[in-house]
Structures are given as structure tokens and as C-alpha cells.
Length: 229
Image 1 (cartoon, rainbow, N blue to C red):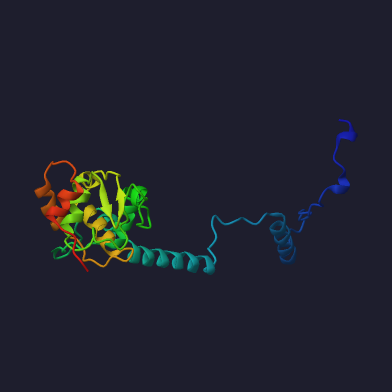
Image 2 (cartoon, rainbow, N blue to C red; image 1 turned 30 degrees about the vertical axis):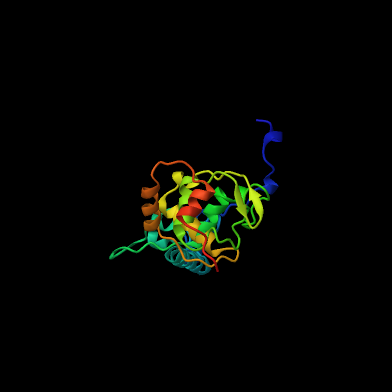
């Protein structure tokens, strides 16, 4: 074999000589050979290592925070707690009495009414009358609930200004609770100071209204005249 292909002996690690000779190994020589073999052998690596204490405490703290957050913000894990249209809240001892919520009413108003009456309740001149500080929404709640459920069509004269825009029967497609929330919001926003409306009252008015068409301003005022302050 050509010597040029042999590895350079200078780069080889010198091997320990283990020839015991004729008299065998001495105790010192055995220790020397054992140490040499131990140094030549790679240290085995462990299959896993322990997590740092900081990481353990970090995970425990995160789990505690997550549990606390869910406890405070999950509505007792009742999906009905987040339903804007839920007419009643269920408790351990049975259903509670319905409570009109003007906050929910505002969201429903913006979605169903603000395009005409505006989010400010000021309406549109010549088309849709203002609801702000209006006797039309105060006083007897049946007037407002009937208009929401059945609608209002015909010329309306309010404070010397005529309005000709027709109001659709938006309440026909809403639940009693939704109508109650909207009516409560309108009766308590923009300077109005009227009482809340319950879902039971809406159900009562809806039954009386039936499937009739829109009211005229004269018809609704004949049944429910505006109260004077």
C-alpha cells in the first residue's frame, strides 16, 4: 500500500501501552490505565434535565391568573350571560325578574334606529322627528311601544315642523326583551326622563296590536295624547 495514503502519525493521539510485560500490571499501573481509559471514553448524556425553578413558578403563576380571570369574567360559565336578547337571567333559585338595560338598548338602537333618528336622537329635518327631550317617547310607554312594533306613517307636526318620513315596524322582527331595551334607552337618553319598559309590557302591547299596519300620528295621539310637563 502506498504510504502517501496513510494518515499522518503526527496527528494521531498516542495510545497508552498496555503491555504488562512478564510480571503483569502493578497497582499503580492499573490505576494509570483505568484513568487513561476513562479519559478516552465520552461522557454519556442524560435523557432529560430538570426545568429551572423560575420556569416552574412562571407556569404556576400563569395558571393561577388564568383561573382567576375565567372565574371573574365567565358569567359563571353561563352562555346566556352574554346574550343581549336574553329576556331573563337564570339563577340558582329560578329566573329573576326582567331588568331593562339601557346599555343593551343603546346597542340595539344604533343597529336598528340610528340610521333615521341619528345616534344623537336629533332626527333628520323634514323626515324623521327628534327623540331627544320629546314628549312622544315620555309618559305612557304604550305610545312608544306601539310605534316600535307597528310603525308610524303619515305627516307629523312637531313643534311647528312637519315630518313626512314613515317609520317601519322594526319591533315586529325583534323579541319582547329587545323592544323593551330599546324603549327604555330612548325614554332615558338625550334629556328624556321616563321610566323603564319591561318585556311583559311589550308582550301585552304586542298582543293588543296584533298584525295591524302602521299607526297614523292622529290615531296614536287619539289613543295616547301627549302629556304636558
